[in-house]
Length: 120
Figure 1 (cartoon, rainbow, N blue to C red):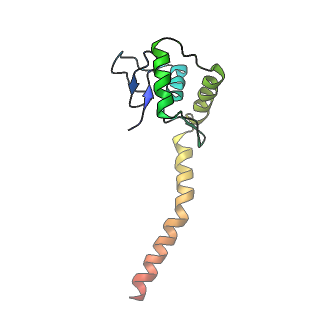
Figure 2: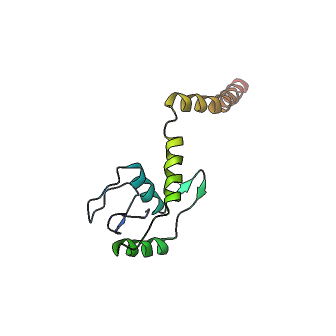
Figure 3: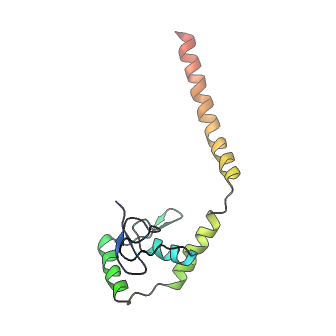
């Protein structure tokens, strides 16, 4: 199970963008989604893990409850920019990349199956 901290009340929840069971808050703005990701075990940018250990997240949750936690605005901006850069990738581009990377392995597999059945 994953762990995230509600940025509104500090309660734990199962995913960064899920609705908090305690206060009902669900991040909808880009900044709130970025903050929610920062306060989760799932925090990774471009293959680099940046999440806090569970114990640290729980400490941060207590700070949020006491309204003593302040986000690093530069970090929030970085997460928002990263999301803006990867989200607009069109599906057609992803399909082309998938086709490009799968064509040769599928062709090789088909050739191997053909050779195996031809020799028997």
